[in-house]
Length: 253
Image 1 (cartoon, rainbow, N blue to C red):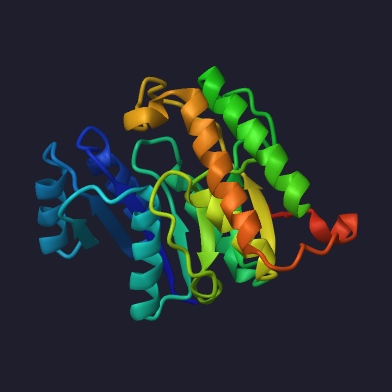
Image 2 (image 1 turned 90 degrees about the vertical axis):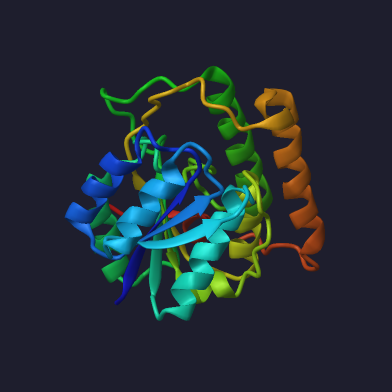
């Protein structure tokens, strides 16, 4: 079972060195997708790639979070990997959780193992910005209403993905609304989904999405538009599965 850690990066010079050092303590196969960074991150990553510490994809300009993930899937498929674990580079995903994802992968029961910051409440959880938690709750509820998926966190980027399953989905949503395409297509393709509890961490609540997505109402509207587009794309209605079959399973490493 070949597993790749994929980390999308955009202007993360503050964090990238520490994150990569921690990740490589738990896994050696690391791909970084530099999405047009302009703050010195690109030069730093090129140095680490030259030393064979990481694999590197560099976009000449910013192409979006979703495109970075799609490129990681394509790279993994081309290089013979079976699974991709995606995680962020802002220290909001703990590299110490990688072995638990790997443990769940080796159970070979699921196609997507998604981290959830809301599956279990922890005393050391951070308090997220109110708009982000509200939008996540609204979108998660909508996804569950539409697809009977039973997930608790629609937006967590700390996930394990079976590469062969991802290739069936023909994903092309390049921006932050990428999960709004992933979930409907995963359900339509009959993929098996599990959630795994991860810690809720918000180091910098002032971080920006960019452009009009910094406005919470615009961001929510955009997510709903992409979701509705995916609903319209599905020709046949999703079969309403029995409760035990529809709900996402829980995997604990």
